[in-house]
Length: 611
Image 1 (cartoon, rainbow, N blue to C red):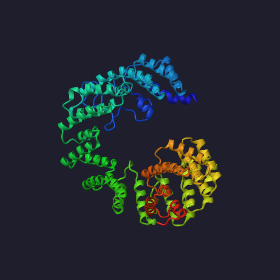
Image 2: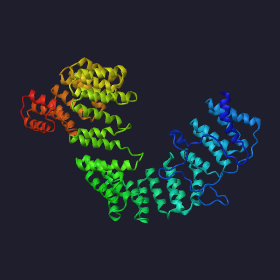
Image 3: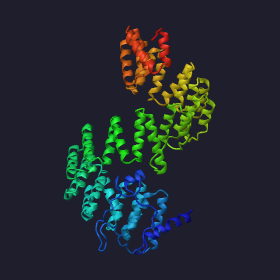
């Protein structure tokens, strides 16, 4: 084992102490503190534009403007036996988990030899141990030993910003702006704003941004960077002012108008700004796309659809517009148009694969469209095309449901059994789906057996326990139901569904009403705006003879969700109060929605009401 470690470590040590001109062979690149936490690529980056590499801090004679500079000349360092021993011991210590010894040794060796690669190695060691202060000290030493290293400067900048040592960052940022080529200076301003947005002290970071951009306020980009910085610092008024200056300087700037809309707190006004810009600049694609998305967020679906149609007219194979239109048309129940656009979306995506786009959601929607028009073969065809991924299990469950609706329960169960699953969550999802198929087919005992088998394997799975309780109740096995719900309460005390289910069951059977009220009240405290818990509260209040309270609870539940079962309960309360015409109207509306609803039918039969 020792020989193996020696073979792995020796090239590293030798490269760090080689003569002038040789490059470091370290196997790692140092990470910034943020990257160490998030495991992101090691460079100072912006969201849009990559690392700040426009120009080194200082230029060597003969270096072309804007090109990366060569590393500083490395020192001559004699690899003495003593130094070799220390560096090997450092690596052995690091591999044993003793990062402190390795770090101290490499820092001392870097100071002794003046070799920046050893300081870089010390930074790597500190970062791997998540020691930000030690890493910053190592990066400072690395930069002092390699003042012309663009890489060292990048990491130094990232560290000082993240640690809020902003004064140290100022001269570097000023120098970079000064030496940047005019055509790249605007981009650099954006990158600096993104870098400074990582600082904890947002106000101080914005002040620094103001100071470094002060000589360049003739650039539209400076005002945009300041708008973004002010917005990040919570100064919306300043952000709006800067965005207006940018738009005034460049009235056709899409970035400027989007920035102004972003920092405008009134959404209606923001949309007016954008729509006015589009009227003057109908080819402003990014602005129109942002406008369409805003309209979707505000549930103005018809207006959003018009904007996406305009985008699609300009670019008939635009994937974003095709998919958005398909979804909006499904929402509007314009299924032929939705099918056309979603199919086109999949065809374009097949011809031009894009790893960032998942076709499965469109395939699920097309399967639903086919099922809605009773084309089960078409629905199954779309579902069969969904490959393993985010929507794979959903597709397999849907496939089994369609097969079951054809009357082939055995085939549906086989489809679920054949689905490849990984882990408890996915396996339990298949068990729940199988139990539901059997429950829908009124094969309650078989459904219970499936859930029992699942609970034998996963005894603390609250989803399985809950469905087990619901099927047990439907089978009139109330003790089994209560035992499962009580176990959920023990495992997950904040699970409001368990309290509500047991409380409602007691109220429905008109037993242990005080206990039922306590259970439902606890559920309601955990989920105050849940319409079904409000329905349960109204029902227990009705059972207790509190008709006024019952009506208030049930009306609130029905406002939140006009569900047929809630309507049945509210109608009964009104009927008992003597408001029979109101009750009948409510029941008629509910019957139109779902004439086969069990609760509604049993209520009308029990009260001997004909609608």
